[in-house]
Image (cartoon, rainbow, N blue to C red; front, side, top):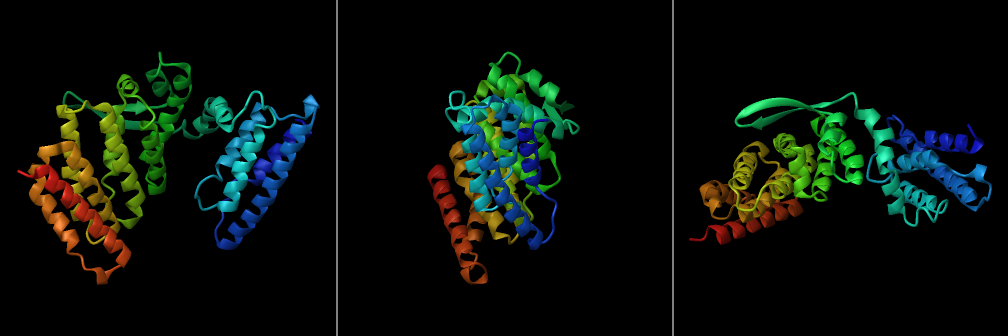
Length: 345
């Protein structure tokens, strides 16, 4: 192994996310990580300026650096705004090594995504295939979604999709299937983003629309704890996007699925949410969207909706966070306004 590669391995090892407890250890890691990013950036600049072909970072080095930096981009517990900026700056420096090949960071990431998924993501999830229940013709069939089946689903599509989507779906479903709410939320967030990028024919061709719907429907039942807020918000967004993507406008199936969400997850959700205002706010936010989709069908649930909306409007301001209560009243008023518009005789 070359000395340059040894340096990359050493820096990436130092930047490995630690298992720590207590703010002292976390602060020490952050200080060390910032110093390591500076050293790593210095190494990248030196290799960019060097004319020695033996003193260049190869693709494996670049991918290792990208993956390491990616763990610091976000709002995770082990990172902070400074580390976030350092990670992004380090990735941006990488394109100076091969500017003709990588004119932009986006182009570099697009080039390496299939290999990163194959080398770094797949090994982590390959031992944990997801078992899902698919219902067809009234019968339930239990299938396993793993890397082989997911890749097979996309045969015949263009090479970019074949290389990436089949590697993304299994780990995403594994995250959604996890018992940890934070992991579930991350998985749903990935799926929601994916659904906004995919075309309907791709979902139909794979037959995974029902799998996604089943997984997201389970996430919508997490309504009893304030720690479920992010998961619930992401799940509503994702399942509404999924139905919009996979079901034809004005089709019976589309109406049925939206109606199930309104009845099972919104109306009944107010029972489970109790006095948890943040959960009630999320449930109220879904009413205008679903009423818009269902139109006059919303009348079937008019009595229940009026009850939960008025109940929310009657929550007194003095008993809890005033700003939160104002948001509750605002969302309730928006829901009432939409229902009046849709259900007016």
